[in-house]
Amino acid sequence: MGRWGRQSPVLEPPDPQPPPIPPRTFMRQSSITKIGNMLNTAININGAKKPQSNGEASWCFSQIKGALDDDVTDADIISCVEFNHDGELLATGDKGGRVVIFQRDPASKTANPRRGEYNVYSTFQSHEPEFDYLKSLEIEEKINKIRWLHQKNPVHFLLSTNDKTVKLWKVSERDKSFEGYNTKEENGLIRDPQNVTALRVPSVKQVPLMVEASPRRTFANAHTYHINSISVNSDQETFLSADDLRINLWHLEVVNQSYNIVDIKPTNMEELTEVITAAEFHPTECNVFVYSSSKGTIRLCDMRSAALCDRHSKQFEEPENPTNRSFFSEIISSISDVKLSNSGRYMISRDYLSIKVWDLHMETKPIETYPVHEYLRAKLCSLYENDCIFDKFECCWNGKDSSIMTGSYNNFFRVFDRNSKKDVTLEASRDIIKPKTVLKPRKVCTGGKRKKDEISVDCLDFNKKILHTAWHPEENIIAVAATNNLFIFQDKF
Image 1 (cartoon, one colour):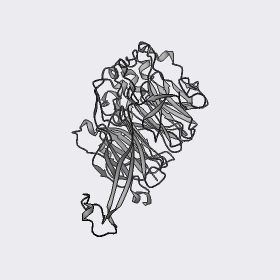
Image 2 (cartoon, one colour; image 1 turned 135 degrees about the vertical axis):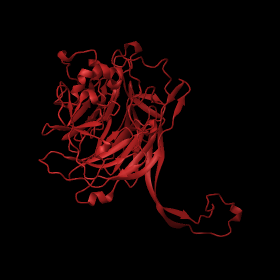
Image 3 (cartoon, one colour; image 1 turned 90 degrees about the horizontal axis):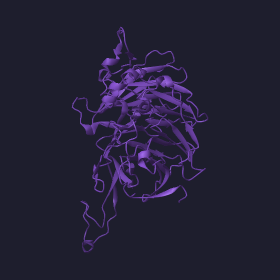
């Protein structure tokens, strides 16, 4: 037993069999979360109309990235979106294993009004498809999560993961090259020392700016099941990776061992009743982390109390309303994402129909509950038949912890203002990719007569879904992934 818990040798012996599907809740769910992926081309549309406002946010179209044709390949579907800590960079991962990094346009920050515009900064292949010969299992290259490390010098570092392997990438700029070597030719070939008859002084040559992404560490072979979360600790030295049944703690400098800090795998796999769905470190307390489960519970663990965090310090769970009890109750109560606030005092959790705000000082119930698409409760049976009920929607905070955002179907996404208790439904549509376009609130009609600007719940397109969203840490700039397109919206500045 190590300082941080059970030491996990890299290369766990394979389990005799994969975990059976928990009753009812996951009877039709694969262990790979069915989420989206990414893009190649970029269309920059400048300018955003500055509408009159009564204090509420008015969102304007800024940019769309990605091909606009309808022939979308699986590899181009966006699977994760993440701003870095100052919002200057925006990274996306896709189902093809690529990572695309966008950089804030310097001119957009000095413009009046300020604009939220990003240009392609770097593109690289993060993961390749693999095959596990021991289990006869294909490992997809899809990027499940991206997490940035805090910047300490001109170089940027980020972690990316697929189902089995986490990689640390270094992203750096180079605008100079050296020439005039004594031991090698200009084409890079090594010179025969006997042919070196004179000593040359190498010189520095200015070259066009190049952005290089190079792999620095590979953290592999420590997860038997599929990785659903990674989170960098506030100490910027360690990070956690979580799969369906275990959470491992890594040091960024050590690739050949990790420490298992949570293990909910039962001795008898037939007794399995829940799986881990998301995990995240506290933003300031390096010893505290939370993880959510398919049972609708969130557990807070403190590594100071025990190296093995199988026993939680706090458990956040809302008692079920008996009047809403149905066959689908267990499925829709599963938490797909949990995010701690920037202050560290609150956290949000997203289940299928709602998003909840929790105070870390109160475990019994959430302090705020916002319905996301309550109108779908009557359609759970058909959503179960087409597997949409297993979709994993993410959620995010704004920089001041005053608003939260999450996605829905028909390319709708929802923004909730915690101060005014008001919310708005917006649509990421190609119809609004015009300069100075202000997003109009959308409303869904559940029955009876439909008003002019409303859309019927029966007309919603469940193949178009906003699963991944990100909010700029300092400004009202949001990034929304819609299939293979990345929409960037901004508030009036």
